[in-house]
Image 1 (cartoon, helix red, strand yellow):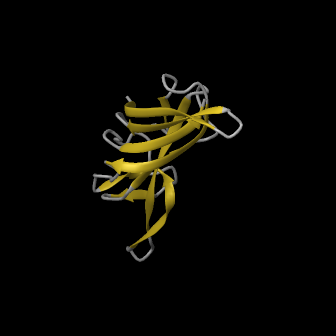
Image 2 (tube, one colour; image 1 turned 60 degrees about the vertical axis):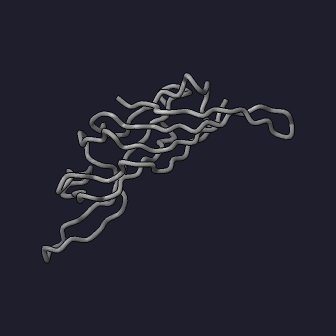
Length: 141
């Protein structure tokens, strides 16, 4: 189950006197990865999210020799590859729930038997994401 390990939430006041909250969350994946990302409930801290960005903390490297196939046929992720948590802005389950998608660099098998790197793609369904931590910065109310 995904969890919020720690949270720092404070209120900012703009020049017009309007309040806005900024929050820094240490988030951790704790289950097998689901396609489309995993939602983190931020409702104890914010009523509505307007923007989310992420930064890496720890556990962001794949461990299996070939860590699974991606969404695209024949694509594989290599052991030691860095994974990144990216927010899915269009998909908040509730106004204060943020969904984060895990992506990594694809390794494509070439005709000659060598491998080449592809772009960032969502990792395959069911891969263990437990222990992957990242910092999420959320702006809202």
